[in-house]
Image (cartoon, rainbow, N blue to C red; front, side):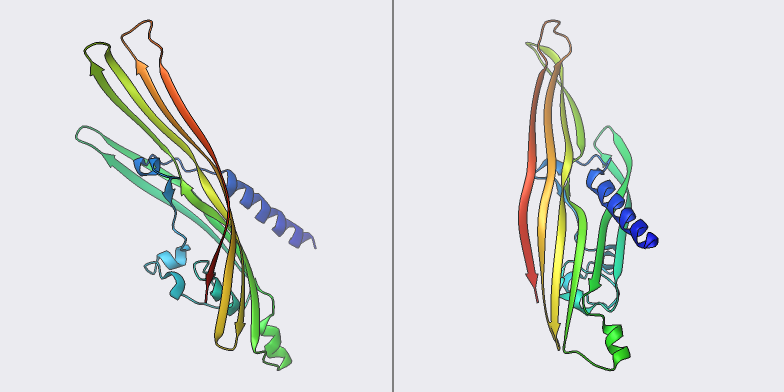
Length: 227
């Protein structure tokens, strides 16, 4: 019982870490919409070119195809982490950034244990499975500075800043009858995005610096079906 409680506490702590974590990347592409979208494929699928819905395995989780859950033969717990090296170049400057984070947490398990069916010597025509996944949906993280000048007011600086992101919590179920499998993911999308535009007037002593900020709270329930 103690080991089980420790395992559940560890999972809960990692879920909290992922929900509070943000990338330290500086990507201008995350300025648009709700940010730069993340890849739904887990690491083992990304290393195979992003197989997506075509991948089914008895010991690996594939949230892109919820119908694959019922093919699991045992409980699977998948944790993804990543590290990224980014180069941003223009005609004058080069910016190199290391970033990384927890990528996803996923737990999936069969509701009918096929191994026990083998021990009992009884083959069932149907299988059930469930999966719970927490992962980022999009990331917003950029800090862009540009300098300009006008004859009437002199030099000034524009600063564009974006922070935050959105996350999704998925609850998936699947049923398999003989060779036909059906699955659905129910999801809750949540997050907070903040966009700031700042203008600083450097040569005018009495000028007011302009700061314009928008904050958005993202909340949505969605579903996905595949068979």
